[in-house]
Image: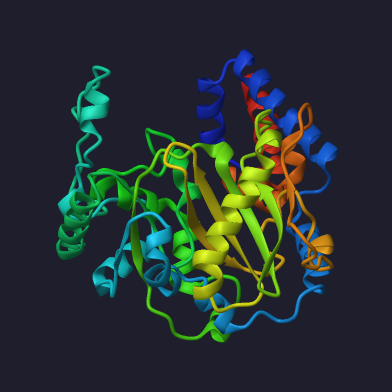
Length: 382
């Protein structure tokens, strides 16, 4: 967004905004400024300083640690202890080109996404009023039909419903693009929309994760489709492993559940059983983090994902300063979100900004919005 508008644009804005609308926008901007003041600066430099301070607690991350946390590295050894998945690899060049191309659009074969049934249920017709010229249509020249066919086959084999991810990341930062507010997909169109809208996915392909690409070196991009399961958020936990022993366990979902305290012994027992039977014998690193899910209906515990032992991983209810000092001495320490607290204070600003475009949480955006409001008010008085 430009900081200044041309005169013709100013007049157009004034014509479209009445005084009530201007007041509403002003209130939003004022609330954003107040939020910034109450939470501290949102400048990236502040986040970087905080991150650098914590990073001093860790030795340099190695390529081995990063590669071991890549999905295709651990899934073959632990497929009996996790959700059924399929890895599509290597990916065709056209598909990678499509994912990294500018703009959010679907390839030729999927140009009419299969969301129509969901819209038509609400009486909305499918693209009736949309006319595309060949010049405007961004899908021209993209042919990834072989990948699309493979995805359709995998979806069928996994029961008809999946969620996508790449080597290290899922497109959870693009959930707002879906009609279900989840990563649940039943067709290639939905998968492409999530992947194409996600910064996490683009970063996985271009740069890898956790360390600079020049240090990470070569790796093969992979598309992973995992069988969709309706997980109960209260039963997902992040586990911290130090010197090949679990030293801490944190609830992940930032809500209070009164029944969790009474399940402490059961949760510790189930996660320890998963760790001893499957993870420790098959995962070679000494220090790392893993997420686990306890299915109360089937009495089974699953591995969800792995991450390296590093400051960029969210410690949730712990601080990295205390985790690096912990030693294995009896049972791991387990923490749940308490009642009547602001749970989001446990999450770093870095993670919080994943919920919205980064530009909308920056001071620059707020200043530009204020300028627009002021100019709009001036024009409205003419």
